[in-house]
Amino acid sequence: MRLRVMVWNVHGFRAGTRPIATAVTDAAPDIVLLNETRYLGFHLRRFARKAGLEGVSGTGLWRPIPNAVLARRPWRVVDAGKIVFRPTRRTIRRGVVLTVIGRAGSRATAAAVHLGLSGKERAEHARELTDLLAGREPVILGGDLNEAANEPAAMWIGDRYWDAASAAGRTFPSWEPRARIDYLFVSDGISVERAWVGGARFAGLSDHLPVLADVELER
Image 1 (cartoon, rainbow, N blue to C red):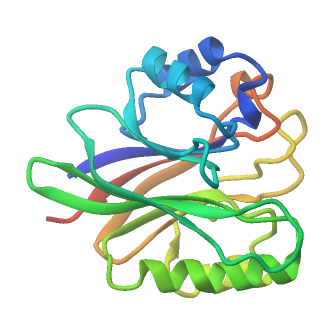
Image 2 (cartoon, rainbow, N blue to C red):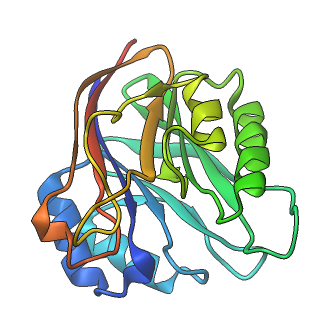
């Protein structure tokens, strides 16, 4: 079963929900993993409606996590939860939106995560994340890790899952990308046909470029 995945930090929808929704619609992803969707969910719901997407997020009044997993029919989110990572210091709350997506009998775990600015915290949360995902294969995991591929958290996750977009290109800052800090990982049971970074049209919509990939989910 083939599907297209997009991973994108949308920078709080500062560029507006309509132009971001148009760019996402034109890219035609089946599954979208988002970061920085704001905390209350108003902008995210407006964006999802305009983009023709449905799904779940960690937004809301209770311990919000501004990540989301959205799907375009016939794909849909059939189960979901929000997990808040253990706090390690006085930093921004971090966590993961963990879902099961499905279509015509095919199922996979899809998770959106955004790690923090502290290296020690990122490493601890990466371990917590992979513990949560253990036994949930096949897995699609995406998000802003805030570090390079040779740093501890990214290496920890990369030792357990395939780095699907390792050769796709740099993502940050969008106007002059110098670093790859946005990732898409997949488990065994998912093959990657191609992966790429969104082009210039995305540069004015966020400070990150999106990562996209066409993958094949084995039955």
